[in-house]
Length: 458
Image 1 (tube, rainbow, N blue to C red):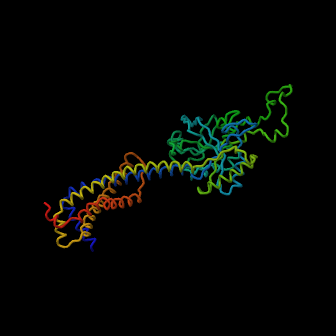
Image 2: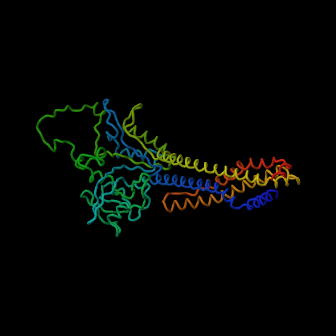
Image 3: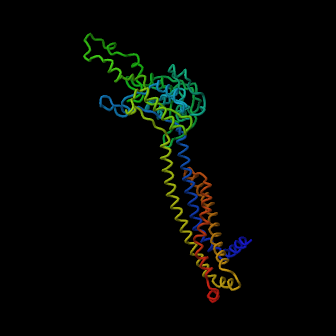
């Protein structure tokens, strides 16, 4: 009952000078609105980053060949290609935390031709039948994904992205039609669902995906790999194992034959059976560290790496990228929030100033109330209630203004925003706290007035 009477009295006092009360609240309104807007923009940015990385796969790991040393000479990063299809099979069979594994080859700069239209996809990827599971490509927009049999027989089939579909087949369903890649006809069997750009701005829909065996045999450079410096060589490399078959000569070899020790310690890699990357997905994002440990153990054993020797491969996952980007976004949000809180402090100073002016103007009223028996605690509660009520009203208006500002920014600028219930609750609490902190001194000063001096005040 006492609280209700204090609130009613505070409303009456604030209505005596409506314009001054509104101008006093303006500092709180602006401060809270800025806090809400900044928090929602920050939350939207964090959500967008997480969604982008989730599209790339938070449980995805990539394995690349790394530098190896032979007789004291380092091959450099990726200089020795020792990842094989058998490594993929071993990882999938022996690593309990792994969901799916695919060998990967990729090419850029290959023009796709369909009828009288042509387009150069950003990247042509390849993998086995589990590539789409690993890369989080869900149900195709139309058609289907390629099967294990099509991978085994190196079938000339392809799945295209939405950008390639728009450029080559703008008005028709491309499933069942052909595209030409480096003079080889590929039958389109499916279209990927729309995925958009990733966090680095690359169009994930501007792609063509083919079986990795087809990439190895049909789209590789002669004598090279699917990516230039690593990967698999062309089909001609598979069928030719001895240069003397191509260039016969009767002269004796000038190079000594390798003995058994050299063959065991320094094996020559069979390049056309190698892949330049293996992509793995863990069963859950939480199992990524376990999967990395298991993969490392399997590959070290298969590659004959002794204890104390460096790995000839490197494993990367998305968790570090997610942590880095989230930390960066959080830092920027915190800095913006500090700036917004400074504006709230300025609004609080305005509250204190106006409340001191109000105490001075109402000195005779305070003295009269004290003369008829009002205690100092009642005077303190009265002015403190007015201060808190003023800040709470300003906070509520500021929350509404901040939400409107966030919606306008999202609509006009296209920035991602996300409603932050926590920010709304914190803003209301901070508004009340500012009312208490900055209203306490004026209220305390009013409660300490001498009734006789107050009644004499002009």
